[in-house]
Image (cartoon, rainbow, N blue to C red; front, side, top):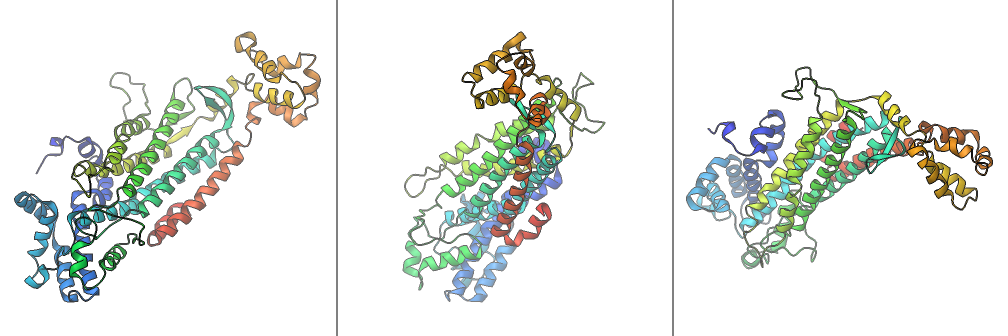
Length: 484
C-alpha cells in the first residue's frame, strides 16, 4: 500500500489525511470509489425502469441490482486496465455477476456519458445536500452569533485602508452573513439543477427509439425521477452525447464565488489581527508555535491558509468554463480536466470548516476597537458636519468641511474648529442636543449599523432554513438542528 507521504498532492497528504474524520465525510461522495458506486446506481435504475415498463422481468432487475450492490472500485479498475475503457469495464463487472438472460439488459441503449454525467450530478448534489451546505450553514450561524453579540459595538469603518466613518463590529460581520447567505442560496439552487440523461450516443435516443416498445423519453424520465434528478420538459434541453455542461458550471461558479467570500473575510480578519490594530485575536493552544525563531509570534495562520487555498482553487473555474466547449456531439478533451471538480468542492468545504473553527476561537478586544475609533474622533465628524451645513443652506459646505479637516496637518478637531467660525457657529447651535452628541462622539455616530446587522441576521436565518427545507425535505431535521 502506498505510504501517505509518497503521495504528491497536498490535497491528499496534507489536508485530507490530516483530519481523518473530515476525510470520511467527503469520501462517500467525492472519492473514486464513490464515483463508481454512483455509476452503478445509474445502471441499476435503468434496468429497474425497463422492468417497470415490461421490457424485462422484475426478477432480472433484482438480479442486476444485486450485482451492482456487490461491485467494488478495485475490480472495475482492474478490468479497465485490461480493456482500456472505464464504463465498459463497469458493464463487464456487472455482466459477470448475472445470468445470460439478464446480461442483455445491462447498459442497454445508453452510452458512457449517460452513466458518467448522471452519476456525477447525483454525487455532487448529494455532497452539497449532506455535507457542503450543512457546513456552510454552521459557518453562517457562527458568523451570525458573532454579529449579534457585537451588533452595537462601535468600530471605525475603513475604506481604502484608511479610517472612514463609524460602523459597528456586528455590522461588519453581518455584511459577510449576507454575502455568504447569497452564495449558499446559489449553491443550493445550482445543485438542485444538476442534470442527467439517458439519450444515447448522440442524444437522439437512436437505438432506444427503434428497439423499445415505449417512448425512450419515458424511460429517461423514470430513471431521472428515481435518482431524484430533474426530468426534462419537452424542448427544454437538447443533450448531445453529454449533458448540457452549463448546470455543472453554475455549481462550480457558485462554489468558487463562496470561496471568494471566505478569502475576503480572511483578509479582513487578518488585518484586524495586525499589531497596530489589534481588534481581533484568535485563541491558540498553548503548545502552538507561531515562528521557528521568534517565540513571541502569534500569527493568523488559519486565515492565511484559507486565503492561500483560495488562490490555488479559484483558477479552477477557468477549467470548468473551458469544459463547456465540446466539439460537435462530444469530444474527450474534458475527460481529465473535469475530474478535478471534486477537489474544488472538497477543498471549499475544508476552507469552510477551517473558517468556522477559527471564527469560533476569535476574541474581540473591545478596548482596542474603541481606542482605534477614538483615533479619528476629531475627523470623522467632517461628513455629518458637511451634510448638516448643506441642509442649512451653506452652498460650499463640502469644501468648508474639507478645509477644516486639513487643519493642523489633519490633526485639528473639525467640530471644535467649526464652532469657532462665526458663520457656522449659529447653525451648529441650532442642532438638537442628541444630534450634537452624535457629532462630538463617534461612538454615537454609527448610523443604522446595529439595525441593519440585526435585520440581516433575521432575514438570512429564516430564508436559508426555508430554502433548504423546500429543496431537500429529506434533510429537514439536519437543517433545523443547525438554524432553528
